[in-house]
Length: 133
Figure 1 (cartoon, rainbow, N blue to C red):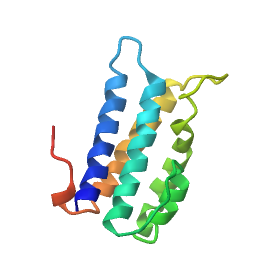
Figure 2 (cartoon, rainbow, N blue to C red):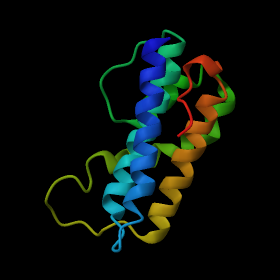
Figure 3 (cartoon, helix red, strand yellow):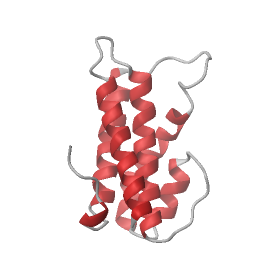
């Protein structure tokens, strides 16, 4: 229970960080999409932890999502939608030639992160869900 609650707490913090990054006078979209990816990753790891499914250290949402599907096949569409967010784990974290995320990219990442976290929270008992606030 404690491990699942820990993953969910961190996922919730990442989602809050993404939302907060967008309140800056010049929105920090690169940070926001990174935290969206992290929220999804940690939510998926929480679901796997709750069901005692081991996972390797990875940022691949496709890999983690595929491990979640035997637990609940109805997650297929959200896993498919979330998989492309994997690139945000690294794309804007290091120097290099890359275009920043657009407003649409950021809006989509935030919508997906919220949906994944909500889907996972609906599949675990209330006792492991983060407290509101």
